[in-house]
Amino acid sequence: MSKEDKKSEKSKKETKLSYYFGKGKRKCATASARLYLGGSGKLIINDKPIEDKEDYFEPLRVVGKEKDFDVVVKVSGGGFSGQKQAIKLAIAKALARGLPELKRSLRMANLLTTDSRIRERKKYGLKAARRAPQFAKR
Image (cartoon, rainbow, N blue to C red):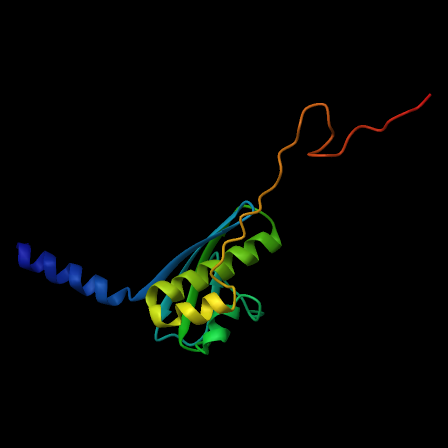
């Protein structure tokens, strides 16, 4: 194979993979989202299609592009609500990166702000982060 053939193969791959990428974190959850152009509004999370997608598609609903993208998300860590919020942030960041003209409306809807609150660590001598052992007067 010559160098030109390799270059043409590479350019074919690049045109085939036309998507916007975004990464979001919340608590211990991390999500990476790909918004594929020319989609039909499908949502796939960890290789499973999701039917109830109202909460996840809030960033797309705000800008009116619900049916324009297919969304594929890989999410790990954390619990259900942390993962859900990480996915919303990842989708919003992908939209803002791919279509910069939408960044202002996403920012106004407070969808691009990372919630920096994390779980407080457990301290020694206590049962949890702040929960002390039961106190007995006598």
